[in-house]
Length: 190
Image 1 (cartoon, rainbow, N blue to C red):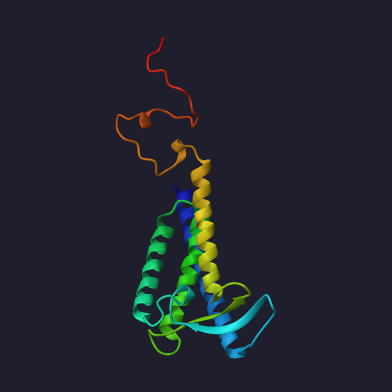
Image 2: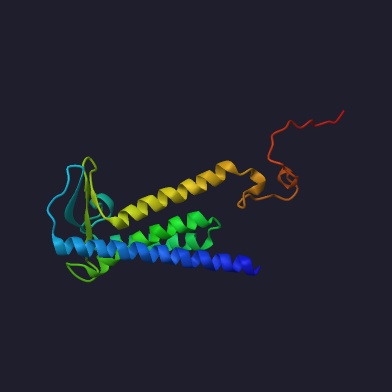
């Protein structure tokens, strides 16, 4: 029992560390870009400072309260999922999503034009991609895709009897032992 408690505490510390690292890297990179005010870069990847008052791709621009409330709600949902999840890798990937969400929320709260009306600083532009983004956006997308991949991999690889979310109804065939193999059932034994 102590090993399980230590393991759970270790995952919480690791998740907290990943969240903190993502927020710190995102805010540090944004500060560097704003201080340097670069105006270009390579033909494939360039640095362009864009202030985004909306969500991804500028959706909802001009409605800062709605965007902040939506962002905070998503962060809370992902935090709850991270706390309840059984998969260690998925919990760590979701911690990256939380870190990215908090990094962008910090911009909305504390950057210009004022408290609670701030714009997210986007600065990475990739040729052929329709939007400019930042490290928080990368953490959100990579973390979310990786967490979904972990869930999908677990759902595909595990037989039904090993899936923790499987519900067994009293008196149903699900109560019988299942070794994960398919076999025909003869309704009347000979």
